[in-house]
Length: 339
View 1 (tube, one colour):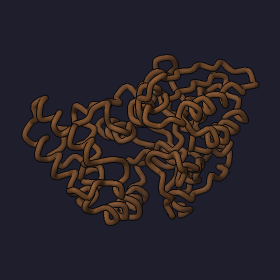
View 2: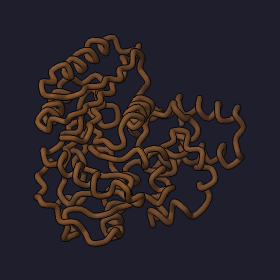
View 3: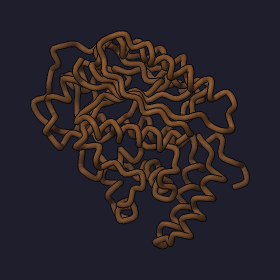
């Protein structure tokens, strides 16, 4: 396979090994490996990180392997973001997999063909391997176009990634407009994206995610995502003891198996968003999540609004940063009760 693959790993040698096997089957000519360093407060991290990195040493096909290993822990926001940026400094396009994203073998060919087909079409910014349609096929073709991108196995180009900004400097100018509502079309869903955007703007590179900023970048460029009508990547990280964002199992999103997609691909003859699929995603996934954690999002939104709406000074941003770090640790169910 000629398309470069970026493999992002940390401290899970078991899932790293499983995903690596599928990469080995695809035999990419270039493999970029991005690894985070151990966390100081976790004494078993050095051994686990070393074991995960040792998996990469088993490359036994003709392959140029480039490693970007951090000696210190950058976190699950900065490490992937800086790693992907490093990859796109060297190549024009790439397939990106994390250590819990298990692809079907046809995922690689799917990405490679579409990276080539839409290489110069700036309307397309993201190729997703994940499909939230739950086998309800709504399109007669092999894939469709969406506003929503998913980072559970994906591919993109340097021309698109250049818009990624961990600081989200354009967010305050858009926050109090109808821009977000025009995209998600559901007033209750606006806060689902508003709170991580608020946090990212307040915390900058210290925030513990990078994918919300990528979604924001695509939306600010009116970019579309390609989503397959068959799910091509399984998330094997749900319920894993070392997972950061998926440590608890999800009865819907955590059990979507990877399946084969047929070739030759049936290409849609137009580049038009599948509105019904996007609306279904908001109804079935986003609103469900909001109803489960209503108070969590509301509290974050109110706190961030109080700062951002006043065009915060550097000092007020620091105060908000401190409050977020003290009160928001991981998933909603772990939020401190002191609110």
